[in-house]
Every structure is written in C-alpha cells, then in structure tokens.
Image 1 (cartoon, rainbow, N blue to C red):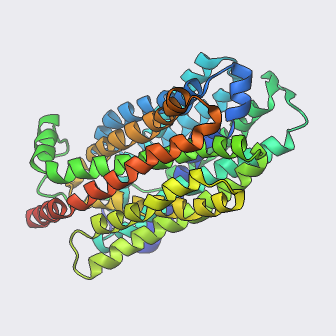
Image 2 (image 1 turned 135 degrees about the vertical axis):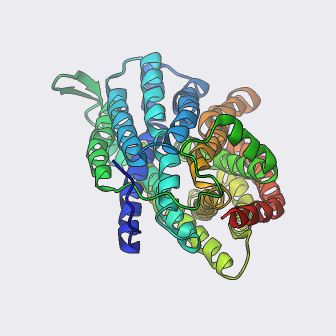
Image 3 (image 1 turned 45 degrees about the vertical axis):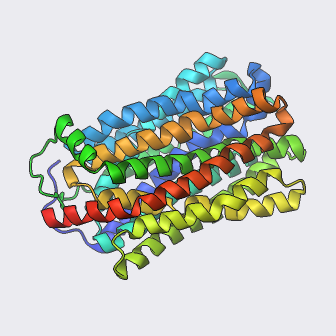
Length: 440
C-alpha cells in the first residue's frame, strides 16, 4: 500500500489511537494473564517461584526484546499497519496455544511465541502515531495509546479472576479437539482468540505520510548511521533508556508478584483478588498515564523544551514511598489502598516516555530507536524483574511468605535511582530537541 499523501484529520487520528489502544490492551491481557495463575500453574507443573518467573519473564521477554530490533528497522522502511496486524495475529494464536501445553517447556515455548508477536506492535505504533499528531498533542496521543498497558493488565486480572471464580468447582473440562483441560488453561483460550478480530480491525488504519524527517530523506537508514546518531546523543538516550528501564522493573515486579503476596499473606482468593487488583490497575494506571501525558503537553505549551523528562521525573519521585509501604503493610485495607497511588505514579511517566523519543529522533529512525528503547526497558522490566524478585525470595529471605519483603527491597532501590537518572536527562534532552528543530 502506498503512503497516503493527504494530511489526516485530527478526528481520524484519534480513531487510529482507538484501534491501536485496543491492540495494546489485548497485548497486555495476553502478556499478564499468567501472573494471576501462579498458584494452579505451580501446583500442576511442580514449579518453584524462580521457575515460574522464567515463564512470566524470560520466556516472553527475551524474544520480545530481541525481535523488536529487526521489526523496528522494518517499521522504518515498510508498511507499519501490516506489521502490526501480523504481530497481533501471531501473539493471539500463541496465547491460545498456552492453553494446550502440558509441561514447563511447552509453556515456555508458547510464551516465546507470544513475545515474538508482541514485538511487532509498539515500534511501528510509536512511529505511525507521531505522523498523525503535531508535537504539542503528541504526549496526550501516545499517553492514550499507552493506557492499553494498564487497561490490558487490569482486564487480564479481572477476566482471569472471573473465569477462575466461574470454574472453581470444575477443575477439569472436556473441550472439543483439545480434550481434557485444566480450568487455568481455559483462561488462555478466553483471552487469546478474540485478538484475531483485533488483527483484522487494524487493516482499517491508513498508512500516513512520513514527516519530521530530521534532515534524513533516504528510505533506509543504515545500522552505522543509527549507531552514530545514538552515540552523538548518548547523554539523552542512555539516561532515557536506563531511567525508564528501572521504572519498568518496578511495574513488572509489582504486577507479577503482588498477587502472590496478597494470596499468600492475606489468604486472598485468586478470583477475588484478580477482580480487585485488575480494577485498580485499569483505573489508576490509565488515569496516571493520561495525566502524565497531559501534564507533559501542558509544560510544553509553557515553553519547557524538556517537558517530557520533567513530567517523568515527577512521577518517578512520587512513587518512592509507596513502593516500600504497599508490600510491607500488614493490614489488608491499608495495603490495597496504598496500591492505588503506587499504580497511578508508576504509570504517570509512560506517555511522555514514548513522546520524548519521537521528539528527538528523525522519522526514518523512530522505529529502530523505539525498538532499542523497548529492548532495554523490557529486558530490565519484563525479562528480569520477575526473576530478580523471585531470586531474592528464594535465596535471600528463603520463605515464600516474604515475597512482599522482596518487592520492597527491589523496587525501593530502583525508584530513587530512576528519578535521579531521569533528572540528569533534562539538559541533554533540550540539546537533542534543538538539533532536530534546526535540521528541519
């Protein structure tokens, strides 16, 4: 399909955001659903916390991060809509395939497939959205798209909780073709197969004309040129990647192990907790990321050229007390209440994170830079955060009931480091943004 020459209307641009938001929501449903199933999966497959963390994190995360790099490069020179549609179809099928696995390695391989499919979405989506919106509306547009993280994670827990509750008295079901199936395996069919309809919906999006070329006019940017660009602006890219990687570590550690903490220490039913925790993530996570995007745009309209980094630093700083207090609270009501600001402020920086990269990167590099960003962030967050926390539980505290202590320790170190690094990025961001403006 040829790139559309006409300037898209703002109304149509928001339609595009709606479709991509739906896709991102489904990606996080399929990604996070396993975290709610820790108890039945561990029991049926005979796993330790560390082994389970490899299914949640490493199996998904390592190929999600690695495949993002070539797919980001493909997004810079090919039809981004088609790349995203193919990715949605692949991860949806692989999620459903998780429902027919019978041992650790089969589930491990199916999770790899989910990661490969999901790697196609965000690099292409970030690049495409930046061609639909002007700079002063990009923060809120990308923040709205990124609410799919929290809507999806929240719905994963809510839907999973409802299915678990509905099937609590029927641990085994006989399904056509599949045969005898455990109730936790049915959850993967419920959340995976509807994604195929989303893949079809993506074809209603038009591929927009590329703009904000940053002085680069050729169709393909070589690896050497990309490396030179990143090295020349290493001050902003290094701080951005590492600062947000630490934030991703916090969110993923909480998303994976907070359910286990509540179920082990407060005798919380998995189905009930899924509904409650999912609602908190969906409401407060979505609110946080939208507020962060709007706040970044508000700062930009008042002349702050480093607006995205200022907004991000505020959110990370505000989260520090809550990442320590929430997992250590001994009262159930207090612990649940503390989760609300924890989720809100952990999501606050993410809309501006994506916007910041688009503002300091030429168009033909955006897919690759976004993929590089996602590589670093998800290597720290998705691939390693669950396992780091599990290792602290298994080998430091040596007690499954102390997973809350592990969360407080890991996230309590990561949060202030993230805030400090993002604060140091303000000046290099301004310098990089001025170079892009000068090139155009």
